[in-house]
Image 1 (tube, rainbow, N blue to C red):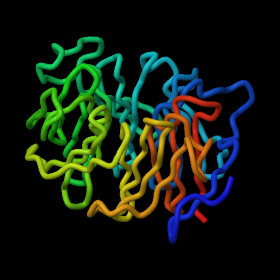
Image 2 (cartoon, rainbow, N blue to C red; image 1 turned 135 degrees about the horizontal axis):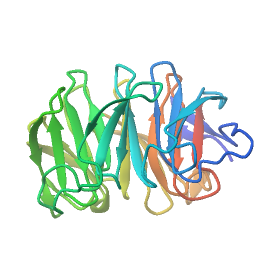
Image 3 (cartoon, helix red, strand yellow; image 1 turned 120 degrees about the vertical axis):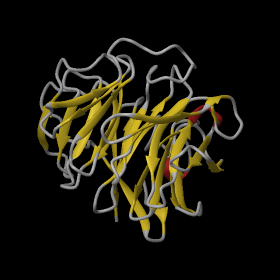
Length: 288
């Protein structure tokens, strides 16, 4: 397996990352995020749902045992270091301290809103907090809405409807916000990423993807994980200019991805992917 990527964005696949404690397993890793200390957090369906690792793959800690449903969906680490877990089957998003203590919960556990009607939540999929402390939630599996909350958890506005036009969604899979205050929504089953302002006004769409699942932005660069057709990673400027990409089904990246679901990037520029199928649940691509 050779070098992946081009120019200043070259990588090599790291085998057997992380160093799993004996008898432990992710089962399936569904989310991955990194904090300011370069600690990699993995959300999985295993007995230890939230695990923490250093960038070398050494185990640091775990928490969350018995706290989540059998199908939590994603996680997000806010600038303060607090960790949000979006639990699709419980229909909630919960905020935790770095040690796992619950700070607050958005939504009503096991009480979904009516499907499609737009109130939070019905099988939410992702969450992002901004430096201004706004909270955006993609309410994607049973609903077709984006919700914006204030820092206090007050619902400010919602937008979206089923469909394939501007501001319409087939499956909102995750949400990210860039330094230009643009809200990126992975509209997975419409094979695109839609961009909005904070009030939900449609700005543009990026249509170069096959089931985009998550966007991670670091140093004004957007990293996208796609799940469809054997999965792929693509790297973009914020002006939608492709820097480099590779696929898991063919070319130099063949075998490095199967069904990528979540992505993050550490301070060294190395990429981590939660892969929901295949022999390795977490894939690391070391920047070289």
